[in-house]
Length: 199
Image (cartoon, rainbow, N blue to C red; front, side, top):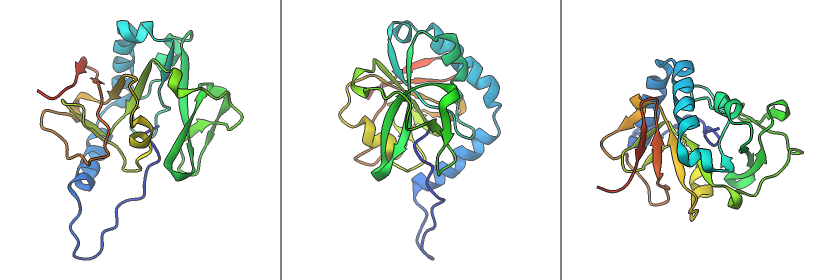
């Protein structure tokens, strides 16, 4: 899940569309032109061999929405992990539950998420967080849908945070970021894993 997708930005007449809104539209189109099935398999295969991920016991991830990278084959390859996926709550908050593919329901945004009765996980016990993104940059900036769910959740968390994104959506130049946007510690594409940081 990418956090809840927000409705399309509807600026007032004469008001310019923000750079982030333009980028969101652009990267949605880029992803629509990709074979996300093949990309998802490649990215999941890389992650399944990553030593840090293999050492992790509890991993917070997501269920893919639309053209997001699907981590379903990663969950299947490493069933011994305690996988957590989020459920959207009011005020743009998320609650984390143990992943159970048979206990998923569609929320009001159309995303699959855990049923409220699913086992709740303490996110503070996580060893790693896999974060979906429309695009990332090499210094750890992330472009999401604009709902702010992940930025709120990631704020002040020291747990390693890795962005999951196709190589076509990884930029050398920094993405526009607001003060509240949270940075990622690494990026996984179908090609390789990138450590991030200010050069």
